[in-house]
Length: 277
Image (cartoon, rainbow, N blue to C red; front, side, top):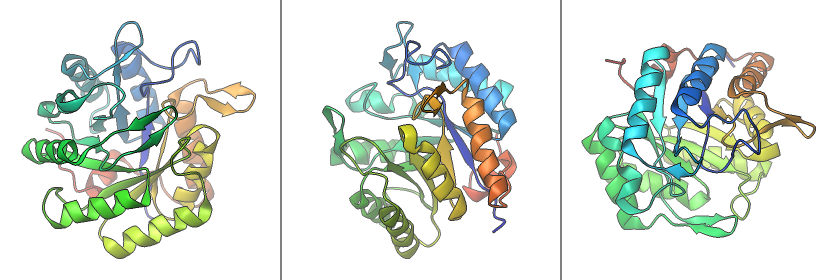
């Protein structure tokens, strides 16, 4: 197996705070520096959330604009993927950054349970976010927390609500959602390949299961995501010192399975994204 593997770094998220791990980048300057270190370590997608000064999550388009500008200046060619997730806003707030025309944005196409809450993605909001992505030429990364989300993404692609080819991320290990199960993972891959043969896919694991999904994805020919958003530790006894350290660990798995880490040029070609302007 020699196909290049795209490494995505999820730098901050909406939950982890400095008191959980001092390495979590909160300010825009910290985030840009963390992305740059990860880019040099092999990451070619930066999955981005933004925070207020008090560390609370926000969907403020101005902060997203500052972060996007900083990444594009310091990491030329890197794919900027902004989050439209529901922890940092509600309704149309979740798509307020799409007019910035990032390369990509996350898109959850269905609801599911999270720890202590329902992650609501009602059909009207999903359709609106998808239409805004088409309007601003933003490629969605489908965040599949459940098997039904794969089927829904394929339907949306077939009827034109999502511009193909699809890029689907299997998210496993979120408490109350899909657990980390190898048979389920293999069925996800098989199902997506059957329903959308031209789709690309990525695996993301949460907490201690991050490294498991990294290895399953890399060894199975997919792409993978890592970073402090999903996991703040290297192991049970050690906090991760940086996002770059987690990217380097994923890159070592690529070497183990004889897969080259995708360059930004290769990542853009694989995902059918144009060259940066």
